[in-house]
Length: 258
Image (cartoon, rainbow, N blue to C red):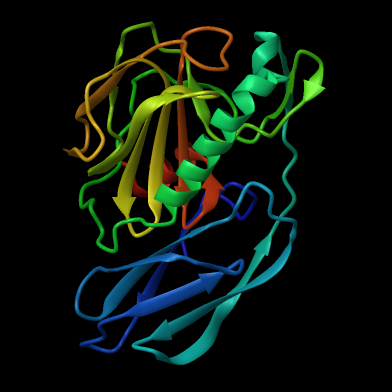
């Protein structure tokens, strides 16, 4: 097992020994399917995301090879994690949206759920993950956000204070499933890396790709901007693994190029 830590928002990488010729491995953890893929004839790897809202405790991880021999691999003991709080001032319409925007917000939420629910059944990446911008992250994953004095959802990604117009690179190969303006995240590119692994790149000033495009690791997909609910220009990078919100820096640490 590899991980930075066993805390909410972290990615866990399991290496599984399977009988030669095994054609399918299924891994279940936190009542969700993990992301398994073959390394060679007898080894598989599985990506297990510990969602941002996971409570501390002991959770079983179960494996099934070719539809049988289900067993508990071991228990994951999730430790507590204390998240910081940030207070931000943004346009009032992004804290308490007007009634006229509610239908749009609901449609976009349904769209995001739909596309994340039909990820490619094939692994679309083979290379290490790369940083979408060179700057360091300046806003911690999971930070509890208070906008204009009102508590809102925790921060489900990492923010990078890159200059306006700077190129934003695809963290890895995949297919662009969303490239459009969304109410809260502004101009947004959502990349399906396959098997339930997604990258969200938000608040862009411009798009360099279209929905349906296949992209490679490092390809420019957009430009840094300040669209949506923001206090200034930056890039927001979010990652979901099998439906779990995980810190992109955890992904880089485990599966990145450096």
